[in-house]
Length: 340
Image (cartoon, rainbow, N blue to C red; front, side, top):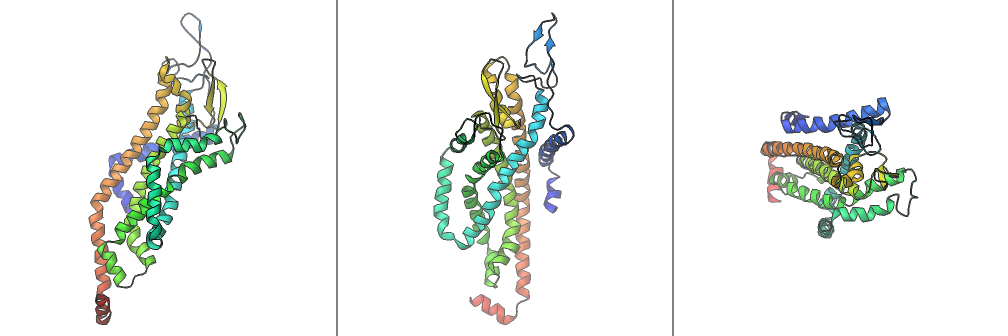
């Protein structure tokens, strides 16, 4: 709680938290009270009485215009916000939480497998993650062999999508967290605590945890940003979370449409409009995803700045706690500890 009170003083962190949290809550309330209904525009006419075909611009149909099916883009974006933010946050959690236990366990009990695991993690960083995720998820899409084309999305599809985007990053994060634990474990005050007979569980809970938890928040926010970027790349490749249906678009072509309206999916749906007379349609999800990433980056920078200023104070406090422990030793215990 003390760290949160400190972070609120940073304007960038406050801006990012309010933007991301407010957008998610607004989308959630729209689902609760309006059941995610997306209004469609009626047929509009020009000054000469001739009908205008969709999509309509934000000037003709404010605030953001309509897509090629006449749907209000502002409502589409509002509906998809909770799925975009929720999926990115869930994927980030699944990347980090298992890696915490794996990383700590490896560093304390299985140091022998740390090097081969690091080699696996390094090899994944050299292979394009977007391509790896696409190859793994392509067969899950409605065009693949697992599900029939045009079938409604199932929970299995969503689970596989989230699992793939999470599992391929767990080895990397496990090694990263193991390295963080090693850096903390080699601190002088922890060596003193081990000399005094402290067990591994006490060292983890009393000494490593206060230093590791803030680093985990940094890793979590970074993974949130990376998840948004990866989801956007997959959206352009027509891999949508929540499934797709196929409809005929403005140009008479059969196009994939995201059922959940999440922003990465809408980016993929409207990507081709960048090279038409309607480029503003594609720029809407691009701008919103970019805004989410910038908001998370502001939170990340604020957190890193706070930790850089608080770490010396935290280190001094930990050293003082060990000094207090030393004063409670008998002379015999102290002599025995020094001899060891």
